[in-house]
Image (cartoon, rainbow over all chains, first blue to last red; front, side, top):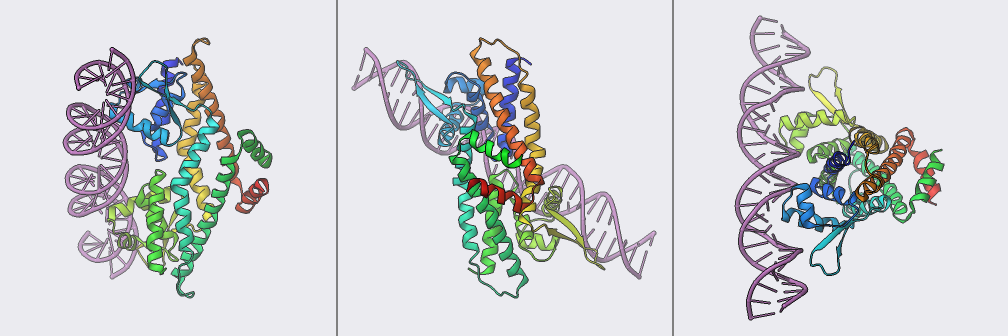
Amino acid sequence: MELQEAKQKFIEAWGKLGSEWGINRTMAQVHALLLISPEALTTEEIMEALSISRGNANMTLRDLIGWGLVEKQHKPGERKEYFYAEKDTWAIARQVAQERKKRELDPVLKLLNELTTVTGDEKDPAYKTFKTSVADINKLAGNVNKTLETMLKAEESWFWGSLFKLFK
Amino acid sequence: MELQEAKQKFIEAWGKLGSEWGINRTMAQVHALLLISPEALTTEEIMEALSISRGNANMTLRDLIGWGLVEKQHKPGERKEYFYAEKDTWAIARQVAQERKKRELDPVLKLLNELTTVTGDEKDPAYKTFKTSVADINKLAGNVNKTLETMLKAEESWFWGSLFKLFK
DNA sequence: ATAAACTTTCAATAATATTTGAAAGTTTAA
DNA sequence: TTAAACTTTCAAATATTATTGAAAGTTTAT
């Protein structure tokens, strides 16, 4: 396969994967483009490469910066802003995990904890089932949370190394 | 908090979480409703409880069955179909992980492997960066894949027990 | 102060995803 | 068979989300 075709497919696949996981397709594609680019790119170049508008490129880049996946760069003597993506995959994974934990898991955990205080009639099956289900989900969410927290602190080698030792 | 309000909030939160992770909001809500219901429910009851149309209820239930999260039940002497959700949270987590792995991770892994065979000029920075990035992502995806496979086989107690020992 | 170079905003538009509801299909009982 | 009870389908309508592009805003150099 030629580089040009491979790039194309990679960007497409990354975009699809992103959209399947609730991440804007364009955002994933811009990220993919920057990931495989050795140099930082300008807004113009990104617009051109992905055929998107200036407004879209601007907002998407801002979001990516918000996720901690991309940073602005300035070249001496130039007015233009350049955008560069973190290339360390483990760092990317941690960053995404951290953001989604903060934005989505934490609020749910908070609510689940509140829901465990629900009052009702112990004889009522609806009440009992509700309590059990919520308690159960709460426990799993707590476990996921702890695992993520460990992962966020961990070095890649330590994390996978330990996991593999565990899983033989 | 009263049971009625708590149910409401739970269904809402589950729907929101689902939509943030690329799962249709209604599907997540129907799942939530069944999760906290001690009895199997009919299509009518689900339509009523969530104010959704018959067509929507029918399709959503079919999808949930496709995900292995809900099953049909029949009561003797009745024509109506009843729907019941698996209540074991660990089983749900495994089921979801398995489906998403099959539908989304596996195809990406396949593509990534193909992309590692890209040909090009070793002196070309674009080529080198592409190869490195893809190889790196491929490795991480492989690790995630192996971990999921282990998780799919694992018993809950063993899985989290081991994880906690590991993470002290 | 002015203008060129560049970035940001956001109302309008387009694209995508979800939902409806009525008709068609199926199954069961008599 | 017939009809009632129930389920499924899918084209059309609606709702949601993403994108455009031109105007407004900002910064820098002269």
